[in-house]
Image 1: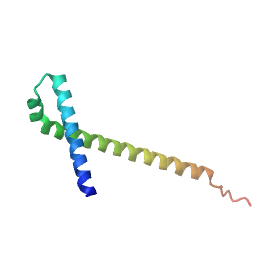
Image 2: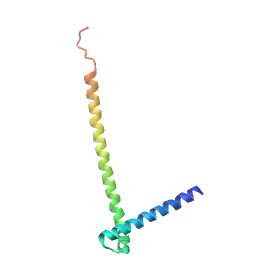
Image 3: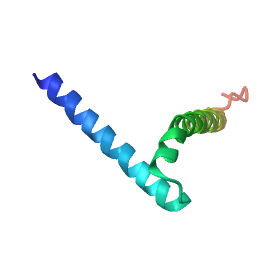
Image 4: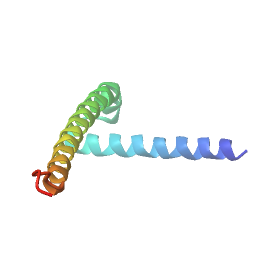
Length: 88
């Protein structure tokens, strides 16, 4: 029963989100609601592609920063290591 309530709530929330998007898009572009709804699948695909591209960029930036930080830690450890000059 809890699952059904969650699904209903999620569906209502998604419907409200779509309705809000259509209304705002219609007001900004001057298109009718029907025209905006017809373009919705391509808008979703474009948004999904853009989200994927941004996620990949963020991942690459994060990996680059991690490699840089790892190199800095490595250099700090080498600098802090006791030197063995042969003097006892």
